[in-house]
Image (cartoon, rainbow, N blue to C red; front, side, top):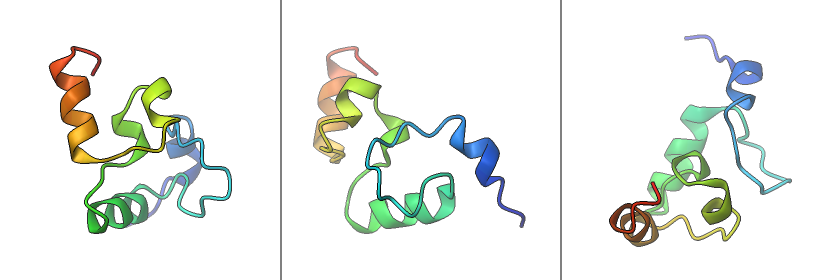
Amino acid sequence: MECHKQENLDFCNCSYEPCSRKGVCCECLQYHLRSRQLPGCCFPNSAERTYDRSFGHFARLVTAGKV
């Protein structure tokens, strides 16, 4: 399978600048799920910038109608 890194970057809202996985969604998803987290693209920009990518944070945002 061919990676579409350049196209993926159009949708990647990860604000962690030294991230080596930007635009490589399969690696990003594997990394975050291993850490029991969701990738930044699952969060609104304001929530993503907190770097709290936990399932609990996501659930609170959904409950509050922010996602």
